[in-house]
Length: 250
Length: 319
Image (cartoon, rainbow over all chains, first blue to last red; front, side, top):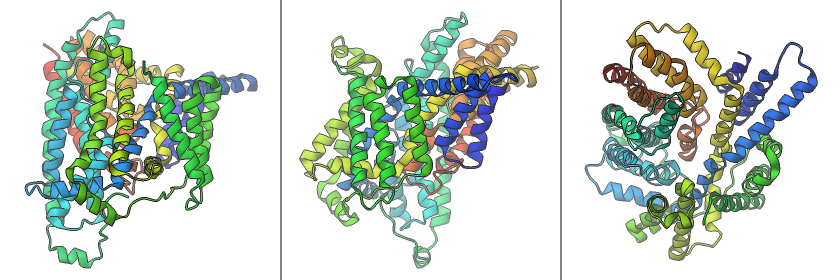
């Protein structure tokens, strides 16, 4: 039971808003020490447990370096931003008169979900697509319709751009038979003596994928309605209120 | 053959450049901390395989300590908003092409490595997407340098401008994955599963299905990863109760159960690469809050979808 203290550290850490890296390390050490703790545990045995926990953490940290390789993308994206990539995304969307934030994100959602469903999960992502293209386009669509955006709505639109990417990915990828989660389920069931084919699993991801599409489409329609309500008042009033024309993400 | 080790060398050189360029950035009062932080990460990428487990653990601890003191944000020279607008007018939609090289390369490389007989000779098939992504970045940077003719140092300085905006959150996903490994070794999952099995009423099909789906979402919120929650909750509730007592079809129960877990992923800052990293990349003011803008945008979809998963499992999984 004591090993659950690690989870408590995580929860408390997030509540008091401590630096998450510190929280993670503290939770790891707590868990390792709790697993070794006994009323008669000696200081040496606890020190050994702490060292073993740091080593286990270090091994996992080294094995998971592939998670951080993706930051390399920023060199290419930054270079293109320098040449006006975000500005171009805004200009391109401003020409499409029918474009609204909700419709634009809806099209992106459909493309992302469909691509993930056939295994193309690498088409998209926050560093590659959302920051350089999707978010500026969504902001551009709103600016074309309503003029300069107040900060609150600007950040709301950015948040929805990231959300569309995540939700479309999560509830599209499981339809593909060779995705990690399907293989994990297959492996888990095999260990328990149940043999299933990946296809038997992935077809049952389709109903949830459709539910996600229906629910999130509704959300994006509501987002458009809300932006219209908040922003459609005469723009002169808001410009008078000194709204900063903040433009691109710097 | 190109392997993950080569991708790590490229990554290590990139982080080493971040470290050195931070050192020379007089506009950043905390430049020494940035230098040490990116330098440690570069050491991990270039030499992690030679440091030993404890050495790597101390390196991770060092990263945490520097991050706890707080990193600064460098201000590398970049183009002005006016220059950017002028460049966007001049170059037109062709600007999108180098950006699309990266996903296109990831896609083509993965297909070649996995679907052709000769592909694995060039690219390690098990890590094809990641390796192809790194190749795509190098090609995109090369194309952009030749076409746009910026200073040669520009890709690294612009990369530093963006990675300093992300800051220490850049390594949070990797750290959380490591915490997951420690949790796994200490048997945290089994304990949670046992508590859940003991104290939650599971008397009817509907209750059992609801408990399994909600349990998947809750445990995913705690662990930040549905893959960590799935074996635990399925071994505690899914298989013994939903499948064996109430007669659910294992493939359907597990497939929908995993997706119930994904609803949890949408609602937790522990899923850093999906929910915290974009908040940093998009420079949201509440990026460090437990429920930042991205998570708040996702919760109203995640909760009805969790309910939908419960209903779907109840209706479809008992043929």
